[in-house]
Amino acid sequence: MNLADLHAAIETVLRAGLPGVDVQSYPDLGERVGLPLVVLEASEFSPADDTGTGELSLEATVQARLVFDPTQPEAEIAVRQLALRLALLVHQGRSFGLPVTPARLRQIAPDGFRADLDGYLVWLVEWVHELDIGEPEELEMPVFQPVEVLFSAVPSGVPVAPDGYEALPVSP
Image (cartoon, rainbow, N blue to C red; front, side, top):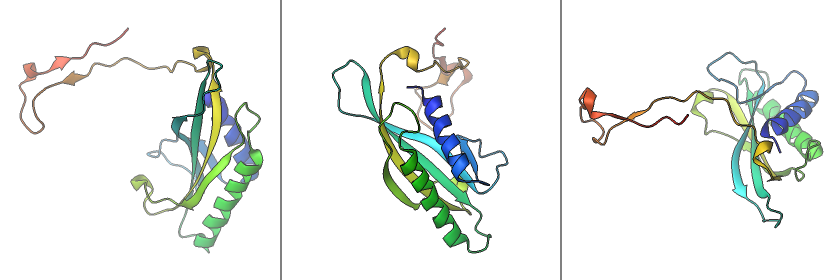
């Protein structure tokens, strides 16, 4: 099960069912985005019942934050209506055509936990899927550049001489 495939399948269903709503996975919120906006993220993975097949069974929590402009007419009703429509699409999308269990809704509620979204109306639709991962090849190795990190054992707030740092080894 490739996580990029899960995100893409959910995005496809939500875009089709929420015309005029921008749907993105992990957008850079420092950049300009259109509103209304649905931000998708796999927020947690918990062990699920072991099937005894050697695969890793997980319960994946997926969160969709609906971000709405509070200056729109009847914004408080509109954001709730969109949140319910989003939840219905998730419920009807069930497995999104992928080898995961049908979506099980956990909550549809206001979300005030993202400081970068203060000033907007934000509702959270959260659900879970169970999925199995059998081979490391199912999860693409992410592309990244190794970086050098310097650390010091000196307590925070105490000045450290430049030679008081040690480089952590960078793996090849």
